[in-house]
Figure: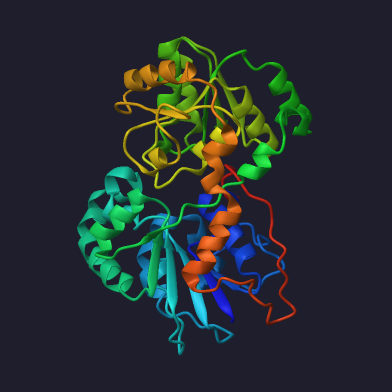
Length: 392
């Protein structure tokens, strides 16, 4: 059976990119369709088709391109005839329709588009113009969600959103996390090869609070810094993105040392996790892959009380749920997490293994065997996971 994988766009880092990687391994003969890909060589051995937006400056301005997306996805010309498509959607990719092809459409939903359904969680949707047109887009979005043969959600939290937004139920399939890779090395400092990263490791505090994600406002890394200051511990902030200047300004105002590690390698991030006293993740997240990685590295996590991330750990065992995302409540949770008994990292993260995701996503699409490669020119070489580096 010949399949098509559809995603919004491909960036250099992110959870959706990680999911696409593993979907590609699950369906090695499937082609890929997206609006644009950064970098252009993201999947060099696959048939990867992009929309005309890829040839315009709009690929650098998602907010400006958003109004065009619902229409673009309705008129996709495909070179091949497919038997099914699997759509990784967090904006409008689930609207996709192939011209002249009426095939089953399976949707893996990271979330209904926050721009129009939950603008309070995404500043790009929280402006008067977007709020004015949002009812129109919500009506279209709900109607086109009915076309899906079946829908999977990445968490119970998102499943509830889907019920409210689309009036559809969904099967929960948690995203894949590279837990086996993290568990495979007892000390990830030995895997760090970059000289500058080695120097950073040498000057790490003996005990610190870690925050790691893209540097964008809704990730609330400022709260990691402020809550660390309240418990009197240094903070280490790993990632990169447009919010860096603001975060450095916050760090300059608090009374504890704050070390920024920009665009860490995987090995460096895992080393930071293994050395941390606690990993703090204040964002209201659809799921939260990084908290699972932290647990695989053996560090307890602290999160706020709302979001899919609270499904990634057992409260009081491998993490603590703060009463709110106020810095004072996060600080109380940090103090509690530091004194948790040591937990079994393998047991805590076993349900998020990539192989479990692969089995479930094949079953979801109705293919429980290894998919045969129908066109010999397409191989199944997929790149390693990409992290917190912003698109070029």
